[in-house]
Length: 458
Image (cartoon, rainbow, N blue to C red):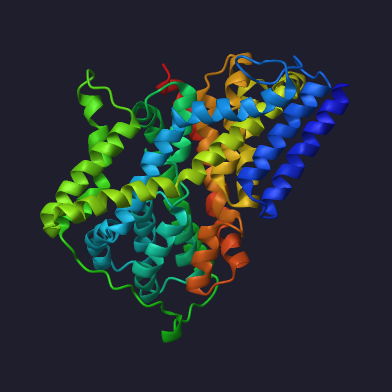
């Protein structure tokens, strides 16, 4: 029976991620796979033979749909609300052009540095900094292609080196305003600001610093192996960035400033949704002052935020589908067999954590989506961490880091396709150029989590 269950689990995992790689809708794929696994467990009396509900009726046709209802209610009252409010703000700052204004003012000092590979590394760090406020990897990549790519080319940086740096800047868990960060904070029962500022920021800074240095060394080595000839045809036209009012450049930073408040005043308690609503209110006031908006225009501006929330709804549904997929795996005994594997191989909790993170990295490199991978695995972590008496943070943070780092190695990733297309480089060549910086950074990321987390958790 054990062999049959392991076989079913293996086949379900392979088929699920094969379907996602083949561009089946990831939300529907995870949802269908989870419900099928729950159904198999119920009818073949695997595990406790019950559908994962707080109050099951033991009538299958009702309970299988109650699983959906329960997950929707739980998610929309927790992490789903966080995702909606964060996503709405990201859409809002894009619509008002605040992100481009921030780029205009931030990029000016970089233009004064003449050493091309120092500029390359600094632009990488600049892009990662922007990722704090621009959560879309593809959106950030396109913005950087239009603004900094021509500068790099004029300094003698090869197409592939410039495209590689640009395509990887959105691959780091450096922002407190991320879907995965919100999910991890929810699983850890921590406020998002506490998860990020007390734990995640420390490992992320080291990981980003290492990645920038690996980019510098790797691309200099690769470019020196070949002569780089730059013609006028190679250059990409710079987008028409207008200076705008400096106050607009502050708007993307507002949520970060607000999130610092509870760090200085412990009596003030705010969840991320409260932070985002307050940020929108302050942003609208600033916009009204700068642009001298009428009341009707102010209402339209708030409407843009609400439109952004509606556009990000699909991500919340993906989270729910991932939770149901994880519930199906748990119902089939995936946790039990992972624990048995860890014990038989004498890996312990950290060994299983490494397996989790490595699988996440490889899957993200195949399907080009970190969210789908982390959501599928994160919900398995609490039970396994408890069994091995390992802090849950030791599972979730490496999983978070490595999944995102795997994305630039996927030829199907939106940011890779977009950057390769505009810079006119081959997608596979770009992925190959990304391999060394991303793989070496992934190894470093797991190691730094292993070193720092025990210190931070004390």
